Length: 527
Image (tube, rainbow, N blue to C red; front, side):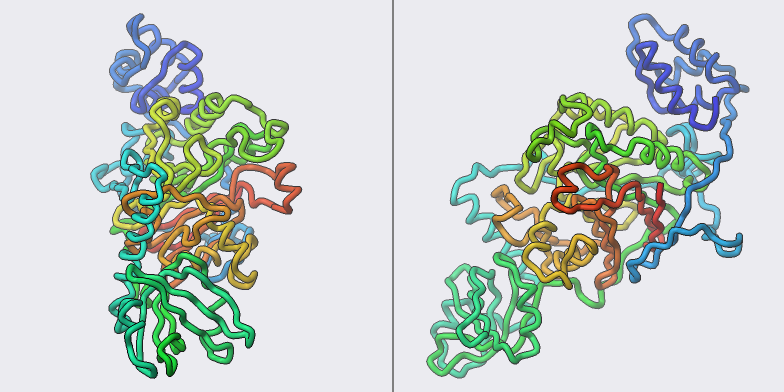
């Protein structure tokens, strides 16, 4: 068998009616003749066994016959990206001196998974891997949809975000400002309940806190008038200014967002290790780019990718059913469970020793309201390939000390629709992500495209500062840095559908952004 024998081993065992654990596949794929090893392992397994274990494999293979065999392959073009310059270079290096090089690192041994390049991943120190999840709504949802539930959610949003702002201004509650004398200096932290222009072209912004609302006027000739077009309903801001003579309005001199502090410095891993960040696989669609996916999976088996130990998928594993009008005409698989079964088969193509984490998206079979819990037990039982971890949308995933905020990205539609093109567009999806970072909330405006599930706390607040912000949904590749946070939208694995053509979406297909966790440098693999 060639280098991709691990995938073939899984397929061959399945044809015999067996699942297999990772180590069993590793041992069989590493045999000098895997085809014979498969037959021996099947013969050695008990009649009532459903899963072929490593013990079954060892019983069929001599201890001296386990050297892994890999074939050399030509790697795809590998542009190296400067995240501050959103332009993609697609050429291969002109000479070996131009190629990106890395010093050797300790990697995990092949007994923890199969097909990880000649040396395997984490071979000498498996304990160095770590992946933790915070902010996952799964199993914690309490909302029943009552008015009181929504009040509780928005009150928690206000409390969390106002806490980030109160140290910057001499905040007074709306009720206290209402009692102050005209001409006084004042500051308020509030949630935007209304934005409207006046007859003279100024901007009136109503801010609400837990004590009431207060009108704030931003004059059109002030420098800060340029940020008015960034404001969204329901976001929390702070303003400072002077009360009018009658005390009934606050003339705004300065405005503050919760924002990422400019002195923020990201955390990095203490060894050279890499993570592939992808989204929007859309298995089940007629336009699923299966050849590109297989090329990506094959690349992950090469020595070039041996340092890629993590795979993070930001939603839309499958195309779903009934997501948009006439979708059934564009489906290759019309049963939602069969879509997930097929996705699981495709996931088996990637190396089995990778740490995999995935969150749902709006095409997945979970509730549309955010935060979205992880998949049901029935779907988890289907997607068991490589023991992938499943979390809710959004989730803060800490990978070897690097905080990666995973969010599918439906709110990007809302931000792009509301803000001017220079600050938010589909062609540059990292720019609306900058706005979410500035507002410290992944879905600041209620209503419109986004649906919010009322919970005891607002899980959509960025209570921690991420080092990497990873989204999908819009099927466009975009990346850049905002206050030293790497913002990345990872494109998709679905060619243009008829529906996308009708709404003028030209997707970026077959891109796999890879982040060096020790430096946060970004490389884009194109397949």
